[in-house]
Length: 309
Ligand code: NAP
Image (tube, rainbow, N blue to C red; front, side, top):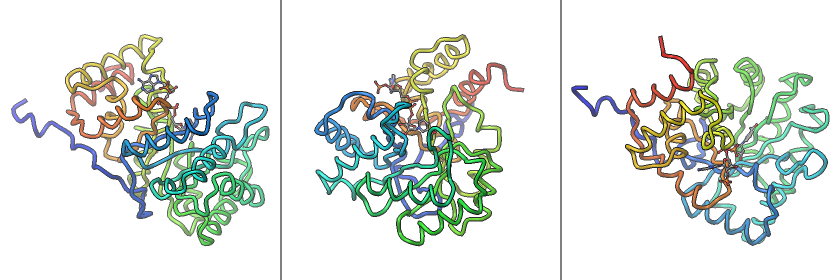
């Protein structure tokens, strides 16, 4: 290694753009999927939201289905955030608010024009906002033609109800079909990405994101916490490869995992799933991490479970 510096990948920027939307956000996001899991009081949730903002995280990710238990609770996470925003209206301007719709239990997906338009209105009402900064289709509805979905979304953008559009859990072909009919450029794609879930690195999803200028948001960047409690041989190998880099950089394994995602040239924004303020704040140490190609590929090879050809 004659020139160690040249071997390092660039550090991620302090702020990232959401595609071509002109919206700038922190390089990590915070997710509210697990927000309603406990019995949090409004005061506790308000403190948590303020703590996340104070830590420097500006992109807040929720969905209409977060809080749904299988029986009840549809809209609960959005409603809780809406209460926080109503109690402290100054918070709204400090965050870039992302939500999702299109899953409608028990069908399970519905993006028909009437339903999708109603779902958007319901999200706006629960969140108590006039505009959603980033609106995702949560999972593709195989029974709605993408032209219909595009019409509903374009109309909502034109009406000022949505600033930027995203899709989640779409294949590259599904994304391309929707973009074909949309007048608005998609800004975001949100697949599951973590060292435990590396499909998007070579199934075309990240290549398409780079080609179209979409910002990838990574859901479950720690594999839902499994990375911190590895069960299988493969999971332990991945954890070990991350630990090697983490020790050298003086960060935790979780932080190294975020950093590993952020080092990819597609500009991945990991969505932190933790609801613990200390863990959320600690995650920001991933931003200045400098990965070597060797360190990065060692984690990738462990994730593949075989030596790279
Ligand atoms: P994750 O970061 O992979 O997992 C978070 C879980 O790991 C929490 O239960 C957390 O517990 C636990 N954990 C254990 N040790 C931790 C450590 N050292 N540091 C941080 N967390 C640790 O993310 P996720 O919650 O599964 O997903 C993140 C976000 O992605 C969601 O909130 C949501 O916004 C989004 N998401 C999107 C989709 C989609 O289909 N688009 C699907 C799932 C999730 P503590 O809270 O106790 O720290």
